[in-house]
Length: 371
Image 1 (cartoon, rainbow, N blue to C red):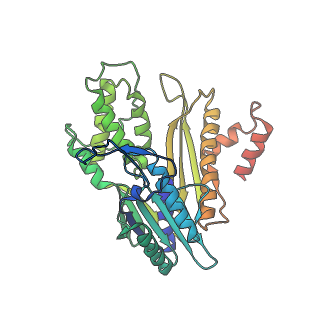
Image 2 (cartoon, one colour):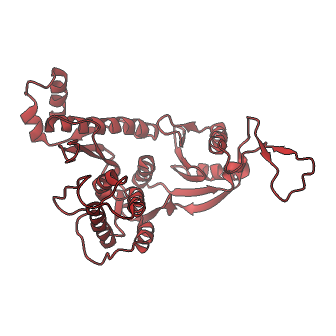
Image 3 (cartoon, rainbow, N blue to C red):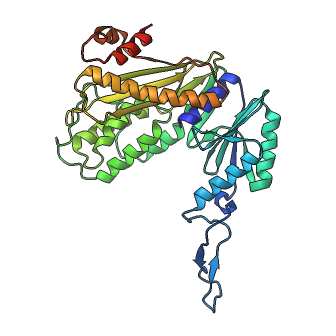
C-alpha cells in the first residue's frame, strides 16, 4: 500500500492521469510447465475413467497466481518495461522524455505516466494479449476511493466504513472525539473474558484494512490486535469506543497534495514501556512526500528497551529502514536527488548526545542529524 500511495502522490504532483484496468479471467492465461492432472468434472461422460492433463492454469490451482504473475511480467518486459527491484508488482517504462508506471495487484492494474499516447498503446497491447476491461480514470482501487480535487488527490474508505458500521450491533450514536479513551491502559488478564471472541477478531481485522487511509487509527489497531487470542470485556469496550469514533468520521482520509517541490521527510517517535504486561515500547513513524503522507506504522518493539533513549533509537532505526527503501523506490520512479532526514525531539538529542553509554559512532551520526 505504501507503493500505491507513493504512485498516486507522484501522479498528483506531476498532474498525471491515473487509469485502472481489470484483466478478464486472469489465472486462465497462465501456461503450465509442470505436469498437472485433474479428474474429469462430474456429469461429463467418462466410461474409461480417464483424467485430464492441464495445459493452462485454472482457479484453485496452487501454482495459478505465480504462473499468471510470470506470464504478465514476461509480456510487459517484452514491451520495454523493467520490473522494479524494490516492489515486484511494479513495472516501469522509462525513456529520456517520458515515463510510464504500471502497478499490478493480481488482476487489477493501475497505470499512470507522463505520455498518454504510450499508456493507450500499453492498454491496446494488454487487451490483445489477455483481454482487459478498461475502467477509465482511477476512482476505486483495492477498496480505496480516489477523489480528484483542485489541490491534489484524496484517498478514503467511506463505503467500506459504512458497510463496517452497518454490520455492527453496537450503539454508535454516542460521540467519541478520540480513537481510544485518554490515558487508557489495557491488560491481557484484567476483566472477564468476552463471550464472543470471533466477533472481536472480525471487527479488529476490518480495522486493519481501514488504516490504509487512516493513519490516526494506526496506534489503536496495533493495541487492539494484541488481545485477539483471548479478548476480555475491557478490550471490547475500547473497541466500542473506536467504532463510535469512526462513525463520527466515516469520510475521513488522506490528501495527497499536488506539490511540485518533492521532499522526503520522516518523523519517528516511541512510547517507552507502553505495554503494561511486557514493558515493551511502541515504535511510530510517518513518511511524507512533499506534504503527503505515504507510509506510516505503529508497532510494538520486539525487545524491551532499558531506557527511553534506547526506545527512541529503535524507532529511528525502523524509520531509517523505511526511508532507505522509499528513496530507492522513488529513484526508480524518476524522483532523484532527495535529501531524506529523520526528525525526533531535538531537545532529546541535545540532552543525550554526550551520555557515556552512547557509542562514538552514534554520537557522530546524531551530530550530523542536528546540523
